[in-house]
Amino acid sequence: MQKAVRIMAIFLLFFILSSYSVFSQSEIENEKEMKTGWSSVDDVFSKKEINKLVKKPMTGLIKIGFTAKEVREVMGIPDSIDEEGHIYYYRQSPIFFDNEWEVQSWDNRYGNLNVIRDTVKIIPGSHIAEVFKERGFPLRVRKIGNSYHLEYPDEVIYMNERWNVEAIQYKNKLEYKQDRTNMDIEEFLEEFNNYLEEK
Image (cartoon, rainbow, N blue to C red; front, side, top):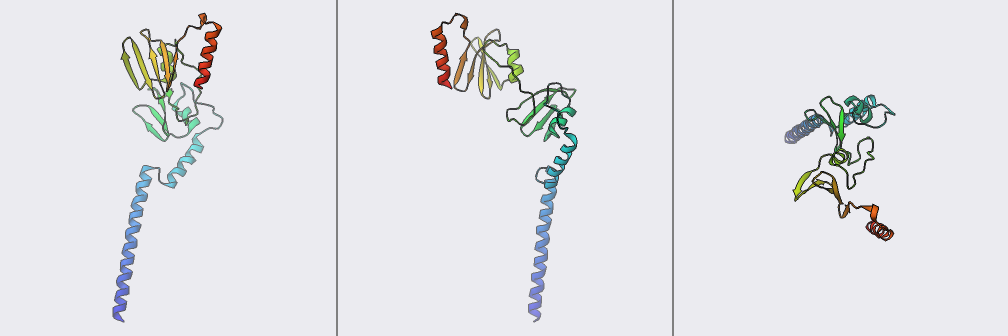
């Protein structure tokens, strides 16, 4: 009988110690999650609640020159902030500020930002200033002969010596500058048919 009681006591003690170990481990993981801020349900809930206080309905779209406060009123609290670089990140999409924390530019390729859609279209003959304003700085610039190749994620823009666009290559399609003033009707129709075939 005493042997059975001892076995039960040892089993009970083992159960209590193992339960304490599991509880301590989960407490450590919860504390770690609270520090990172993304795994905890409480942190996500509090971000949503703060956004309700910060965001203002019917504020419209972010424009160049908006202050950081105005950006938060449109988008809410950023997911991360680069204070040295003056950048707000909403998911993967950055908003770039100047030293006074006013909006300079953004990168909305993932569509996360509520920003004004630019209507400027880069075409052959456009100046490099228009290219930079519309597309931002390229990933890489290469000089080949007398021309410069500005490489962007989805296109390559070819510039001449005077920094005007000579051609634009969108993935497999290449658009050249053409003088259409001297084209006759057959040339127009041929160009239009080529355009339809590419689509």
